[in-house]
Image (cartoon, rainbow, N blue to C red):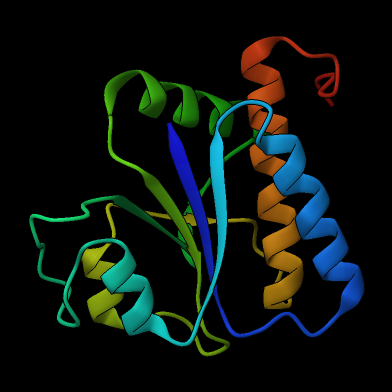
Length: 152
């Protein structure tokens, strides 16, 4: 499985960059992973193989997962099952995208195959990235039976 983590804008805080780098390194033990900073929502849609209107293109297809407060909420175990099922059934790269401060457009939400939420609380976008990365790492440790996740 190949995973791409995409976000809009440059990282401003060195601490966030350090945590991003650390979790990317950890995740890379389990799967191919890439971090990508993009300029806008259109670039995210293009990365996922969709035009600006969200239409599918045949080349560079991926499964797009948008992080949005209105999305589906998972427990860590459910998120691990989601990743495990995807890994078993789908060869396409998986793109997790963190959008702009004002959220994704309706077109982007329609173009996505999945929309997930990290919870009901609002998080700064850079912090949301770190939380997503930690949960991806946790999900892989759950799938592999690693003791990092002790079930609480």
